[in-house]
Length: 176
Length: 452
Ligand SMILES: Cc1cc2nc3c(=O)[nH]c(=O)nc-3n(C[C@H](O)[C@H](O)[C@H](O)COP(=O)(O)O)c2cc1C
Ligand code: SF4
Ligand code: FES
Image 1 (cartoon, helix red, strand yellow):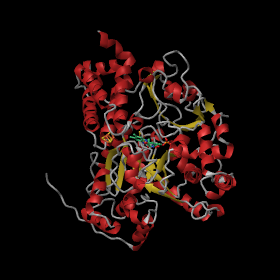
Image 2: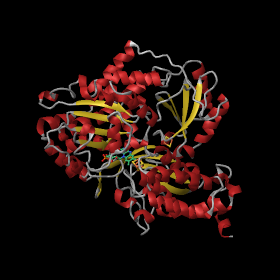
Image 3: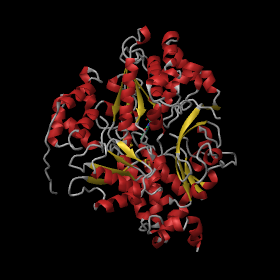
Image 4: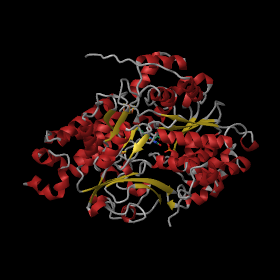
């Protein structure tokens, strides 16, 4: 197996540090490790939506835990990305309730439009398309997650519009 | 109009905000509880209400509270389970998104009853925008004096925070959820000890579903007895139902327990009938983990009685001819749906979500997925159908947590009620090549081919 190494610039800005401190304050002083999941989300959001080994080490240092404790968690949960992904990641729910209301067709359409296969990223690093499991929007199918938000009742026209909006920089990914 | 407890104020403009919520009677239960009731009196009211856990298992909430260890003197915690990842379920999200203060009010009143001074809401990471809604609502509640030190001048103090997961269905299982809240992988713990004795950071902990906790303010305001009169028998109160699939109006509905399944699916107040007027083929009434019901067992039980939206009626007949109310994830299928494809789809979900600790679950869910995929793509054999049965029966009851059972039951029910469809897939592989194979040719129109 070929292991590819990707570089990541690590930058814990004062605002990010402040937010991390706030999250840590939600747990008793001797239970800093409890803040790990929320802190990883914040750090990932601030670093192009992925976590390099170096960044995980940095999180371990901040929380005063060992790096292995961070790796263990990052590899368990699907929302943490261990390699670069597209700036706009289209995550289509493919579970039954969405499946019977056209989810596979929608994902195929997005893939075709963007020229990628599920799981791939466009060469310019702008878009990724992936299939995921039930997101709790079963009554609003078909749907996908984009950043912190859901795009529901998808149609081909809506997907066209979302892609256009992403290209024009009109899509807010995170609610900070 | 049907009785509403949770969603009665949902249409008031601005109810999401603290001010509007408060102007409409919000936080009254906290006032009443702290000023005029002891914690044990609240637990007694909740017991008297007959409220059962809304997360899936239906365990009586008041009884669970009475198990919390108050003797050891360790700090106690209430953790709200907002992981909501059972396919077909999206009601907790609706409640938190539209009326977040109801959950916060419920958390304060319930924490007071349990003597918890530090409580958490554990929300799935994908609901990030709802996480933010709750964070802001909690800030408002702190600013208004409902959280923090000496609430309403009493000696009761409470800190409440939201914690987010990161994409793992298993974290909905209460001990996995606790592990995850401790910053670890979501591996369920072996019970006992139960969380009520040793939970979060080894402290006594109660884990309750969002909807369970959101019922508490009404019970405290109106009495447990009043609550017990709503609904039907041991299915007290209302239930949020997440309705999806081939119906005209998918969405979240609050029903009084006891209405018929027929009314729920067909009345305009709820699902509005079947989409495109196609015939109903199957129903999963309580989330992907509960057995699927075939057409003839949806509106009537095997005894010919009306099937009702209650814990008892939906499970009438056991697994042979019944199902479960579960989480209230109500998925309706018409005749274009393929049961084999659907069973495979869920098997893929469970294989993906197994935490991998126990071999029957880790290996079994993987095999179920592979064999179902083989059959669905036209490469299965008749022996495969028996093999599926064999595998599912070896998972059930042999694992640390109920995810193994949850993966096994849907497969068992699909084979029990729809075996002919599996056989059709084996016999006519060329007819099921297209993933929408039943759209132009529903199974009912080709069923006769099997006996030829
Ligand atoms: C695999 C698995 C997933 C679960 N997911 C959830 C969930 O998403 N939300 C929930 O409230 N309960 C879930 N539960 C049930 C919880 O373990 C627990 O029983 C429940 O949160 C208790 O709350 P209640 O008594 O108020 O229902 C799950 C259980 C299992 C085994
Ligand atoms: S039954 Fe499955 S999910 Fe539950 S602990 Fe065992 S391996 Fe993990
Ligand atoms: S099945 Fe797609 S969101 Fe639940």
